[in-house]
Amino acid sequence: MLVVIAYDTPSNRRRRKMARIADDFGCRIQKSIFQGWLNRDMRHNLIKKLEQIVDKKEDSIFIIPVCARCRNQLVALGTVQIEALPPYWIV
Image (cartoon, rainbow, N blue to C red; front, top):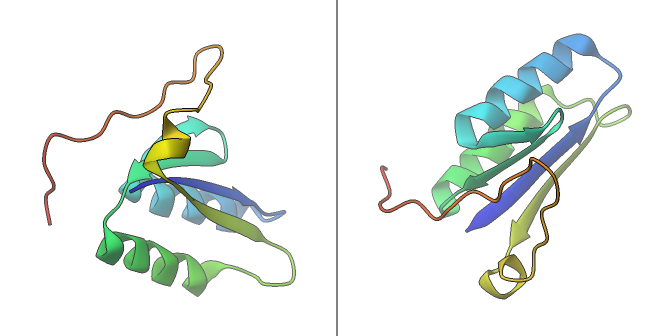
């Protein structure tokens, strides 16, 4: 499934860690927003890794699934591109 990963934190250190983790699972579309195609196990691993660094009092992390129907209705303006479905999965 296509997911959008968005985060916000006042900590530069945690922000860098969040970006590295999100980059392992998708591609950056804005400074704190990533997109990627994740299967169930990959999504679980992403959540597990982010849970280890999030400060629940200061940080916000959203992992938003985009269903096929909604994906067809996405509008991308400017330089942003919607990631294409990969031709195969590597597990």
